[in-house]
Image 1 (cartoon, helix red, strand yellow):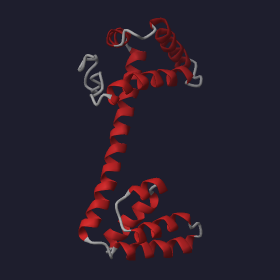
Image 2 (tube, rainbow, N blue to C red):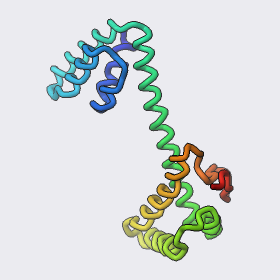
Image 3 (tube, one colour):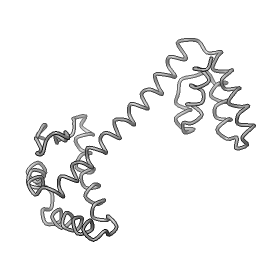
Image 4 (cartoon, rainbow, N blue to C red):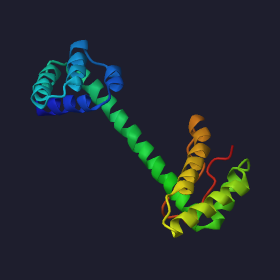
Length: 174
């Protein structure tokens, strides 16, 4: 009973668009969407209880489908977070090691070498002078753009970004 209540609360916490995509009966979806609109604390608490009651009317296969959908969303966000952290580590290596830039340019010959070097130099200067990290963020955005084509093709990222390695390894050549 409490597990279904928590499942309902998880659905309430999701965005309206996501809730609309979850496979569930209309009456349960409507109760969740209505609860999302309620701002009054006591009213929202009562509506959350009602959502829990509605969740208890679901068949086991319906509950399994809802749980599967929520789990897939969590997995996606974990993958996104891991990818972001990998990009951050890559950026930090670019700032610390000039060899990392050479390897990046070898993997992406289309890059403007002068522009990338300028961004790295500016980011180092920003860090040294405790200035706002404008160039630091620009490097992150550049790395993010470089990663997109490989993600669109369904391949893994082009670089080996393990914490243990001090160098980069070409995994996939285009």
